Image 1 (spheres, rainbow, N blue to C red):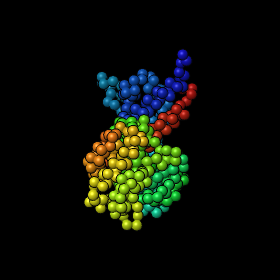
Image 2: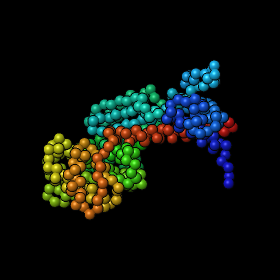
Image 3: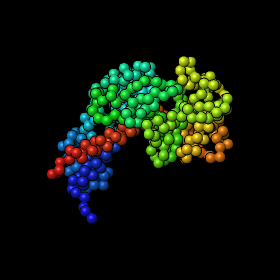
Image 4: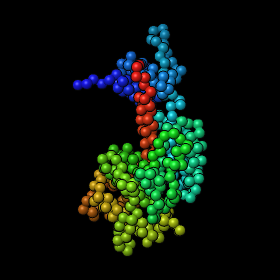
Length: 361
């Protein structure tokens, strides 16, 4: 069996030390040896390399030593300018941008209300303000519109309530930062947040708010489909007041759309006939169970969980039962996008450490 090279062993040691400091924030070399399980000489060499690479720094803090208390130890932590991740949400309430450091702390945030038609103008100004004092390495974007999987562009579909238009977030944001920009729709991000909370590998996330959406998670991965539009359930045929009808048309027939838009009027809906709505939602759940065989169907959105009891009663008539559960994560789209940004930032810093490790050390 071929032994691993010294370069590979150094890289593995550096990753252990770097990831430990991402979680613990500051540690001495002796504490790092305990936390990582590496020998003290190995940790000392790793710390030296990471300091030379500019990823780790001496914090200036010291342990108490002397007079029988042992040697004075130096505390090390991530360098201050190591870089951050940018998280952007484009939603009906406006545009929000956050900078998240490698510890997972939000170190900068800007929010500006914006109508859908104004997002293209507001987005660059909000982001520029947020990233001004930071070294941004990458970005995740959550958009309350369908997203083309290949290009990251927002897609206009019939009956989408929040129509930003032909916006290309990657093109808008790329001049403002160095690094990749990952764009996905808000329901997919929300499903990722729920996946982390649930610990279930196969489930469907049903979003019922001003708009309608769904994400399917199989084997722990969000399934986006060929073009990224999997889960766009507005036109799925279900039971309506007048018979079989597209899901979105149920709300039209019940007079639950906002005047002049395709958005659902949530206050009026909460005073409507829950039985009719529950029957329509149960039809959607039945289709999800038939096509994807989930362990759980999670119901989120501004009004979906309030109908859960009525929907359960309707689903009991189905030959294939599934557990229905209310969403548990607050601000799930933001949480999901932030978690992905943090994971990507940490991986990028580990890769950077490997690329900067001196081969001769």
